[in-house]
Image (cartoon, rainbow, N blue to C red; front, side, top):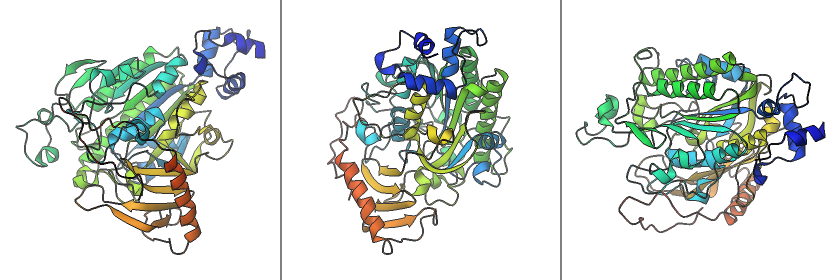
Length: 501
């Protein structure tokens, strides 16, 4: 049997993507593949396809921890995501790696904190249409690693890691791209209503956001009233196209980020109003995707993950979402800014249940590469962990600590149930950064809303987390900043502050 597995290993895999023999055997068991002659008469290519699961990551934009039915929302109906949670795993302590768009997306696709690759900045917190930078070419993305393992790779939706050609998805490991290159509120037209009127009563023509096919602009402004449906249509087309080989689909919705748009089919349906309409349309799209996987008998061979890039944009009132019982939202390092819904679905493979262990979008890269039989790059620091032990019921999460960066500065650290805030600041506002010594300390199991500072009662915990923070920072070398580069201008000169107070 071992000799047969060795024979089936693709000869054209690069050395760093060729899995160790033990990993191949383990994956054969996990994926329920047939690798021996006479077992169903499958070809070696079909056996390899069985061994490597398809991977679908669905990434919402500005969705709050409390915005889904399965996370307690009383009026937003999300039956398909609720079913996904019931059939798979619903994680209660799952985090994005940053509280705003660009750095959180860089972290998911590289498995690295954004400070390491320069995808964060203290004033220009995300990339804009006048930005000249993007995800550096020497970063290794999840798409690149999976393509080395023989996967077809596709990106659908919001990119926000650089809109110029050198930074687009097709230059970062994706075979194809269909979506918008940055946030849907950018490229606002000069004649649109001033202030927030353009958000309270949005029209397509107020925002000249382009829609791209690979590297070609095909529509401007993008018709955002149909964009959620079109993203889902494209995702289903890709699944059908690659049903006979392993594929990686990264579907990054640009909603419910403001301005909110919804199709006529879903307008006025939700008791939560327009925001609820938008979320319910995304939920329906998830249902169509899962239904397609079932129809094609791919559900038992496909891992689907659903999460969001950061918390809800609370400053947009009823056009923003809900962090539930968590404190604050998008832009902040309080729990509401970075703790997200985290759903994992793989019928017949994943052990269903509610998971209270720590997990992060940083962990998706190492987890997916392990499942694909690939090898992680050894020439750089990765900040993620393989979550397979939890997914398959073999053990606890290897993640014990989460670092909370606001841009280039380490603001807080969670270790186990305790979270220490060394620095705090409101998500969006004129207030100055506040330094805390001793840091604010919360037990997130007892106090998920971060209301009761218990630092005085637990000096030993404060000392332990302070040591963890110091050791972490000693190993962080900030990468050259990509967000301060603007088209036709020199990078902004900004005095770099120490990473932690």
